[in-house]
Length: 75
Image (cartoon, rainbow, N blue to C red; front, side):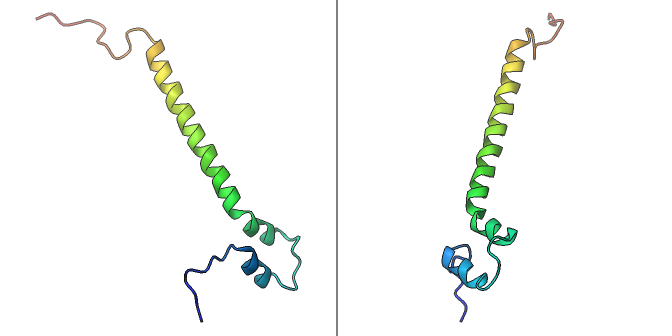
């Protein structure tokens, strides 16, 4: 009766769900493009994380004396 490994985003499953309904409606399009949209979102997030990390690293390297004490202690 129920197949837990069935892909509910497959084209055949979407055709069954939206049979006799308006496929131009937003829900059909969103379900059809869900995996593509998730991949694009993942790529954009990873790109922004890498960009922010590299900017942060470059900014720390560009500031002279960053991370060093201002007045070195002498013992």
